[in-house]
Length: 178
Image 1 (cartoon, helix red, strand yellow):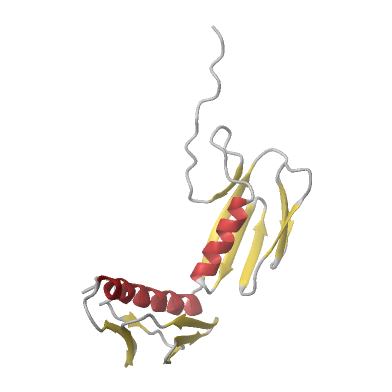
Image 2 (cartoon, rainbow, N blue to C red; image 1 turned 30 degrees about the vertical axis):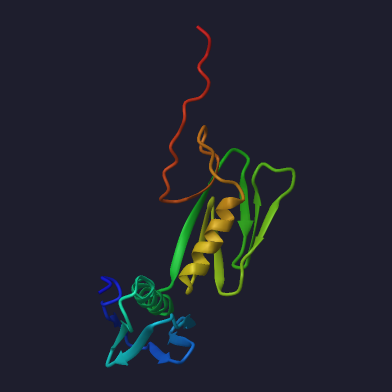
């Protein structure tokens, strides 16, 4: 049995789960998410729990079993609490401004860099920190990765865009002549 897949997903108050043939719909106070149904898995709602089972013990079925349960759990957490990632900009002359849907950054290029958030994602700017938030865990992570990719942190001075909890391993600069 998959260690993740065999765990039931608790359904908090205010969340409804509808199981269909092709997708599972999770609706809650923050919004609605659709989770695709994986092959060889069966999803049942029993009381205030969601139970995922698999049809056989093939390696692919075992992998999909845990994946299906994790996707449902992420959807339940997303429609109740939501997800967020924080990014930090470090560098002399780097600037940051913008609102909930679009941000503008001066990252040392000859032009300002603009980033427009996709539907369902909100961007919040505080000094030199960007907070990416939304109900879809995958979309929040993807947007944070795209923003970070605009100017990755470099190892000599640590300039660039990094996650708040990310540690940049610094390298020594050139050694001077003696």
